[in-house]
Amino acid sequence: MPVGDRRMISRTVVDSTRFHKIPATSQNLYFHFVVSEDDDGIVEACRVMTMCKAHEDDLRVLAGKQFVQMLNEDLVTYIIHWRNMNVLRADRKTDAIQCMHCGDTIESVKVHEYVTCSCGACSVDGGHDYLRRSYATSPEADYIDLSEYADVPSCSPGEVLKEES
Ligand SMILES: [Zn+2]
Image (cartoon, rainbow, N blue to C red; front, side):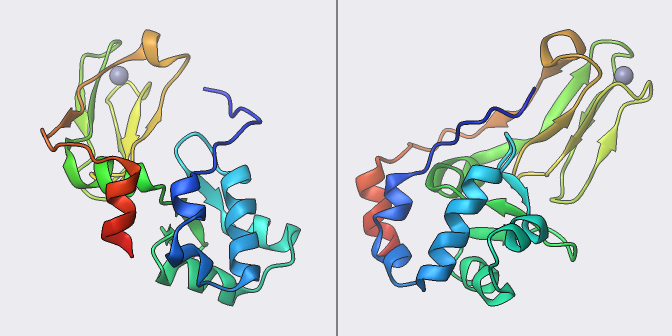
């Protein structure tokens, strides 16, 4: 899937008291992150921070306040949107696909567990925290998605805000 050049910024996040309380430089970095993230909400923090002249403290603030999650020591960072934080992360039961070429079913159980099928066409990553798939040509041609979600009632943005503040 190509990375589009448009990104949605959640007003629920940006209008929250939690967001207003962090320094303007951290808020600026958050906006740059959202614009630079890929389709799975992943961003190379180092590159973005160099580009917008942010300080590493700005990243620490965003991580400390749960706006982003650092995935490794290279500062590859996951942007936590309210829907991911409140719905997807909480209720994903399995992160699995079946390869349509070799028939293997592969599942990522832990956050950094990267699993590839035996023919090498597909892989999954991210465990129950985020979804990341690699494939040869397209999702439709290469795999069947087997991810399951638990039946947790989804909440409206207003309800989420109340829980956060
Ligand atoms: Zn395969």
